[in-house]
View (cartoon, rainbow, N blue to C red):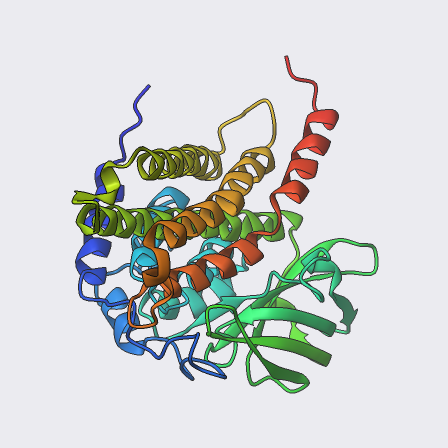
Length: 377
């Protein structure tokens, strides 16, 4: 078996490291000190750098100006972005592009994908459903009306919605089939209500009241929603891994310099054991992430469908990122709560990622259902 990344994937990783090397995590006010959103818009300057480095076009086919790479390459880039808390809709835009590339009509692909690749069209996605707990495709109804479709419903906690150009959101037809609709943010009948995430970023509740869209803007293949959901989830796991790795590195650096009784606290057994446990968490998060990304990238058969590997990655990422930041706060002592030090920002982002992934227990139930439905040989 060959577990190394391809040359193309490695090139994407190196390009990401070069772009994110100049990003600092405290470029906006602290979410702990800001009553509202920390900023009105995402980091447009960084977005332009990502576009210039061809990192916004990774999942897009060459005929539309992209590199034609897979979710593994995307996760490598997302992992680096989380280490600096990059304030850009990279996950949402890339997941949308990957799904549109595979399932959108040819006319829609030709219209939107080249502009996504250059960063001139910003697309976000809605996967939170109506409450954040219900299946997202059940939050909006889609019914045909002549040559068009009418959308009604509400999607909550949509990231970057106020500054994106389009929103890719799931809905369901009268017979329960999931569909995806690409809706302009300024479309008639679509309204946005501000929400503030735990990380201090602007989210939105998106309400659709008889929103009429052309049939070409609707993806009717049931596989489209499954792909979008799986790529979004696996990408979120990559963000959790990158954030956790940076937090553990910060903790290692701090405990190596902080002295008590004339010795660095990192040399104390209780500190070393806790840090080692979190290292093990990160390695488990990494192994399950790449397993899920590999299944999505290759379509390789397995004892369970790819949703099983995604569920395992979610279990580790959701619990793991929480344990890593909690241990980091503990080992930093009161310094971890200092708003002049960036650890509290990572804690806030980690909590948002944990909330986005959902509780590990629910993913264990999903995995149990899959195990019950598939006979393992």
